[in-house]
Image 1 (cartoon, rainbow, N blue to C red):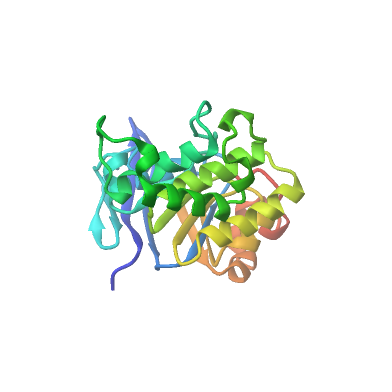
Image 2 (cartoon, rainbow, N blue to C red):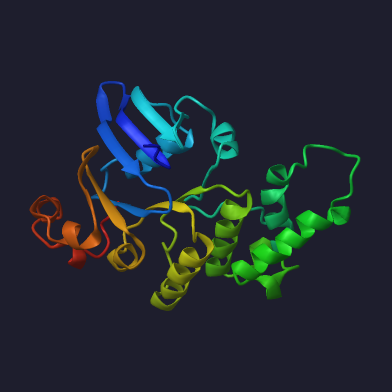
Length: 256
């Protein structure tokens, strides 16, 4: 059976220090998976291995059955995997519309050329308008990204992340720094824009985790100690022990 994303005996060492210690994980198409764990557990390293920013010491990463370990981030992206970052990663001096259009041009077949005016790309411009409505920024069409609120910038980054049509999306702490009201809105936004896609998210807010994920993978010292439904993970004794004796559902923060 082909999984949307699969990790096989994945390991990553820096010198003599083992960070990822033989991780196995299989994510089905359309599943939403949250990756949680204590500080220093290896969650960010795991994301970097999946997205091509780091290469594994050993093991395999498969995207829709095709090995992607060893490929560059842009090669991984063009095979159908896209990610956001903890720190907002957009073009601050471009407008909302321009940011989104940059994100989708390659996937629509437009390559690097100086002989074509972007204003004349009717299909790309129409798709950009649709994306702006999806992420709720259609009223901010011509606003420079640097002049958006923090929550709006995060929404824009989500839009850029999905713009290329990737079917596997990685979100790294998507609600970090948001108020409770903004977080609630953002969870709804993520659910909406990733409908039908496979989602992996690293998140420290347990309210977000249990409100968003179909399954939860718990990483401790570079190993996955549990991978199950939210209810099963909440009741898992190993998980509770990893969070210093407190049920994971009550753990607020400290997820990184």
